[in-house]
Amino acid sequence: MTKSTLLAAAALCATAAVTLTACGGDDKKDDGKEKGSSASASATASPAKPFEGLTGDQISEKSRVAMTKLKSFKVKGDMTIDGTAMRFDFAVAAKGDCEGTFTRGDGSAEIRKADGVMYMKGDEKFWQQSGEEDGSSPEETKAFTQLVKGRWFKLGSGAEANEEFPFCDAGVMFEKDKDDTRLTRGPETEVDGTRAVALTGKKGAEKQTLLVAAEGQPYALKMSTEGGKEPGSLEYSAFDKPVTVAAPPAGEVIDANELKG
Image (tube, rainbow, N blue to C red; front, side, top):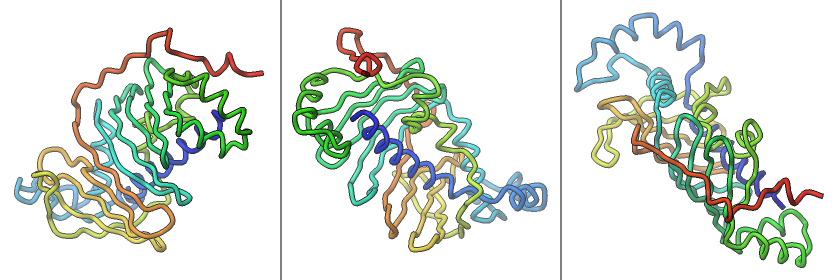
């Protein structure tokens, strides 16, 4: 059951990462342009025109780099994967700690990663859905659901935790993706009162949109994918606001390793 739950979570995270990093420009093309006149235009751009002379891909890359330098941020959104609706709302620290909620279908779970250790606390619907997808019998699912009811399930630590739920790894979310989508710069707009520039691109049946802050640091404010098999959106906020995550009380934790065998 745990494996199926983590696979669903990993699918969510991988999709989120692809949606974001697909907006990065090609390394060689961007490097060449950044060393040329476009980079100079950026350096001398006025506050009224922060991205003057830059292409959509160059703006996207500046945003990606800015996001990698954050100490913390919040991300929330929704996606549809394999016909199942998913929602999430997380606070993430660059050092790897995170906490938030993850909803899949009718079930939801709280997620925490503190000091490199991952914990999950799902409601009854969440574990029932996981059991059904894992092929567990109704009796097995019911027994497991009762066992973890109201308790935190300790999933793993270190590299294992990062692989199982990479949403808590800012490095993974904002890493460079060679299989990128070329972006076209559009008009300026606003996101919650912040000036932003719209970048759009097409990849097959999908239309991707990235809104980048046009004042202050060029952070990604909102991203969306329309059409295709996995539509959804992400919203980023609370940049560099402190994120402190504590491990659940030991008496409320069940270690997955103790249930093996």
